[in-house]
Image (cartoon, one colour):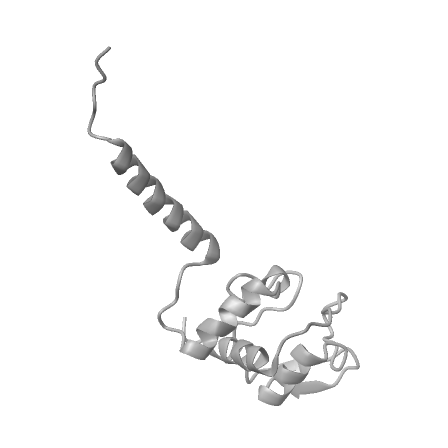
Length: 135
């Protein structure tokens, strides 16, 4: 029996599958964002890998947890009625000690985490670069 080879050889199929697979993976992860600094890109990667994105969204858009977009520097209302500015100190505290400043509009408390100081700093850098005015 003679086998007819069309334009898609086994090698071409393998390459096509690899390219399509890579595109699907990048699309599912939100791809790369060349506009992020190195620290913010690491923060985004850490947020996805450590589960933060499960509540705060793949791109910081929010969900079960609050949005990170435009959060840095904004005023946030806490459960006790007080209002604080989401500066670096607040963001670090909120990540490291989620029970310290409970947000008014969220009944679900963020779980404790085991993030290193460097990972927290990278996530803060990512949050700061998600300024809603830049989009």
